[in-house]
Structures are given as structure tokens and as C-alpha cells.
Image (spheres, one colour):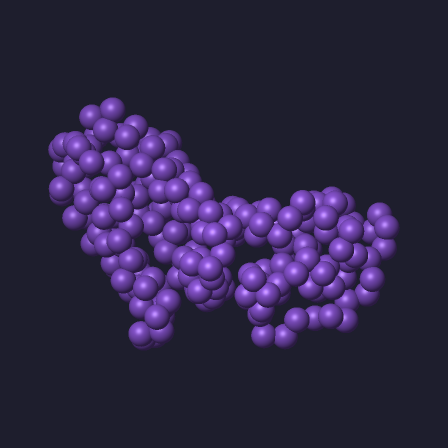
Length: 211
């Protein structure tokens, strides 16, 4: 992967704080994917962003903080919060799982996940960031399921287990096959069909009445 080191130098006041932050995150992702977390320095990121290292540190205190912000930024494009607007639970689950599958199975996210897995054992701070963000995603679904249980929609004794089962059946094997390069990426139709079946099985198992 080529890293663009030929960007013009930054100009004071040329970008808003939000634009500067996004430029840094984009550059950081590019460099992390090319060099790995351990080998990447803040100077590398500054050069790729066309900024000074001092400017980078004005926005992020450390490489770990920057990496965590990158993870949060990537997750922000994922609508992981199951909306509760009166739609049938099966529709909510299907939409959320499809959004999640598109995100975790995307080539860029697969590459980033491989990077994390490669360095998580030797670099505890990478593992810390990954754990926090994964738990964030899991708890969002768990909280929504708990709300439905309290409303009498579902009968679930083990909510974390049910959520994990749902994620795994919906796209778990697609995910690890891509991580291990065991085959071609599934088509959109394949992913949609798998999610529909997974949600149907989930509803038969846990719904208190046909919905």
C-alpha cells in the first residue's frame, strides 16, 4: 500500500478542527495498515497527514489515544444502535445485523482486524482498545434485547449468550473465513440470506408469540 508523503505542508487556519481531526485519522489508518501499530510513529502519521508532529499532539495525546479514536471513527459509520420506533423486532434485528455484516466484512475492516490480531499479544494497548470497542458493540445489542425481554417480546434467560449466538450465526463464519483467507468474500445476496435465516431461527427460539 502506498503512503502519500507528497502532500503540501499544512497552513495555519486552513482547516477546521473537525477537518484536521479527520485528516489525521485518515492518515493514521493508512500508515497503521501499511506499517503495523508497533512500527508506526506519530512522526509517520504527521508526515502522511501533511502536518507537523506538534499539530498531531495538539489533537491526540498519544498513539494509543489516536488508535482508539480511529476505532471509534470506524464504528461510527455503523448504525449499531437498534432503533426502537415500533418496527417489528425481526425487522430491527435484520437491519442491524446487515449493517454490522457490511462493516465487519468490508476489505478495509478485515485488513484492520488482521493488524490488530497480529499485534494484540505483543502490544497490550492494542488489546485494551479492541476489548473496549468490542464490548461497546456487544452491549448495545444486549441492552436492546434486555429491553424487549422487559416488554414481554422475548423470553431469554442468557442475554449475552443469545446476542453472541445471533452474531455468530448471522456472519461469524464469513468473518473468520475472510480473516484467514479461506475463500472468496460472500456476495450481498448471500449475506442477506444468511441473516434472514438467522433472525428467523432466533425468533422461533426466543419470541414469546409469532410476530
